[in-house]
Length: 253
Image 1 (cartoon, rainbow, N blue to C red):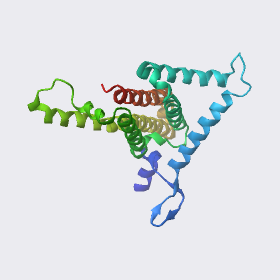
Image 2: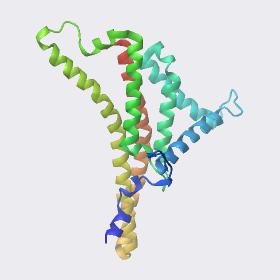
Image 3: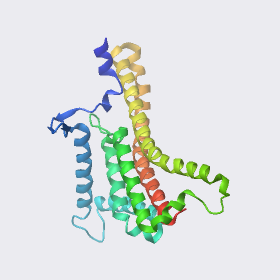
C-alpha cells in the first residue's frame, strides 16, 4: 500500500536523486539530477544563443527572431527600471533571465526535472544576487548606503523602530524573491501531476469512466498551456524584481 502511494505521489517528481556519488574530506560533491538539469539548462541556453548568430543576415531566421524577442524584452526591462546605468549590468540580467526561462521550460518536459521547484536553488540564487546588490550599493555610495534604512526628516524618538522595520523589510526581499518562484513552479507541477493521475485512473478503470477521462484530459491540456505561460512569466518576474532591487541601491530610494 505504501509503495503504491509513493509511486503515485505527485511530489515524487521533486525528489533529488544522486547520480554520481562523490565526496571529498567529508564534503558531498555528488552530482544529482538537480545538478544535471541545471547544467543542461545552461548548455541549451548557450547553444540557443549561438544558433541565433548562425548565418546571421538582414532577414532574421527563426532562432534569431526568438533570441531578439527575449533580448528586447530584457532590454526594455533594464531601460525602464535602471535607465542608462543598466547598460553595465545588462549581460548579467540577460543571462539570468535566459537561464531561468530555460530552467522553467525544461521542467515542462515529461520525466525531466524542474530545478526552480526547489527552495534550495531559488533561495541560493536570490541570496547570491542580494549579497551582490548590497556590495554594489556599498561600492557606489560608501557609508551613505545605510541611509537606505533611515528616510530624511524622521523624528528622533521613532528612529530605532523605523530602522528595525526598514531593515526587516529589506531582508525579507530575499525570501519573497525565492519563495515566489519556488511556490509557483511547485504548485503548478503538482497540480499537473494530480490531474494527469486522475485522468489515467479513470482510463484504467474502463467502462464509462474511460469515456469521461476526456474531461480531466482536456483540463490537463489547458493547464499545460497555462503552466508554460507561468514558466515564462516567473522567469520575467524574478528578473524584473532583481532590476528593481538593484535600482533601489543605485538610487537609494
